[in-house]
Image (cartoon, rainbow, N blue to C red; front, side, top):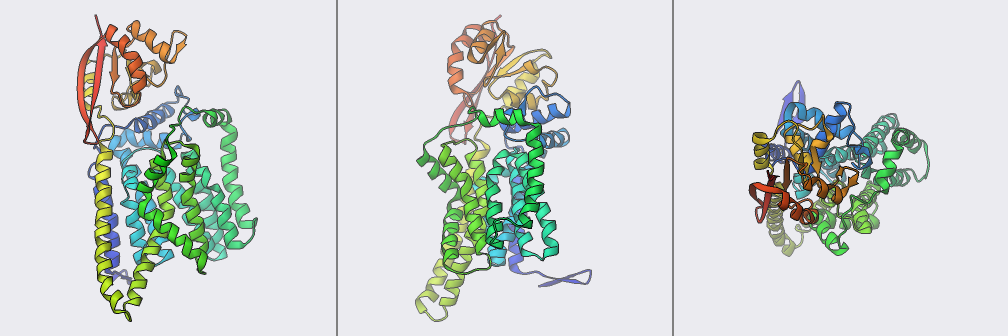
Length: 491
């Protein structure tokens, strides 16, 4: 079908309809339930840190532990002031959505329109993308900026010379923004040099110098200004979570599955045959392996699942191109071979079942994700009804309560956390024990989710000085029972 708009003819096919439906359904599915749970602790932290920055206070010293600049927290706080939790989650959805569009464009570049559709579906309907699209953290915008950087870099080497410089500038600026948003994006820097070398057969040329001058200049200035905070962050081990490498590898494959397998096959074929985009296949497979390699090398499980979305951006187009090649092989072979001609229908049916299963499994995983941390709804209701202005709250993930009650921006001690605490010259557990014995806190909230070990140490002191005021049960991931307790001082 051909549509005519302002005397311009647009060819509209069933493939275009499927692609548009896939994009629109993603928007509908994610945006219909943005209030699925109270804020996750990371969501609350970024919004409250950003609110403090907007108010000109920096009690948190967040640059030394946050893993990114103040760009995302300020964006989060600004959106939150107007649209609340649903608004900042919607922002994440928009970031993932536009990343999915770029994945589709690259998939179409490597094969055809069908390849673009498959790449889009593989990325947007992966459990990782679905989860990230409903989580208001800095990962979604960092991914979007990184995707924009590499997409414009591809266009810079694809278009004419007069356009190269425009795309190079956009690529460098987008890369800098990605690193500003989340420092882990700097690990993708070597891919830029590989892209340049595979296209120009030169280690250094004017394109790379322009790109490097812009990106390095911006990042260098930021490093000089925030050097002490960056040093504290990169030398700290407080935000690592060690795990067995074999378990991590299995978890990664479970998250990447089809895209990882298809990308490996695409890489093997690219090495054997000459192709216009052979360089792109090689670079994207290497790029897609960077964060899995980082986690396996460091044995650090922290944020691993979110980082797989970065890998999927690079791997999904490659997997889509292989699926299209397989389909085209069966299509061409069926003309002369009776067995393949009859088997084609079988493989087509098998493929449809695989797609439906892929989406169903990922939707099921996403449903469990929405319930994967304790709801603070009942505890917040209790605090609204009983908390007075100057009361002190001590809680696991205290930022969640601070965020939902939009309080604590004038007294940094009013929302203490089980992660770190200072009191009368003491720090950590000793400070917590002393404060509990002194009945310093008006409320203590434990959910046995974030700091189980610390809770067990503190519980005898809490029971001696506090009484249980509220118990709230919640099924984590719809399966495991979790209990949140609110304690008040014994009078």
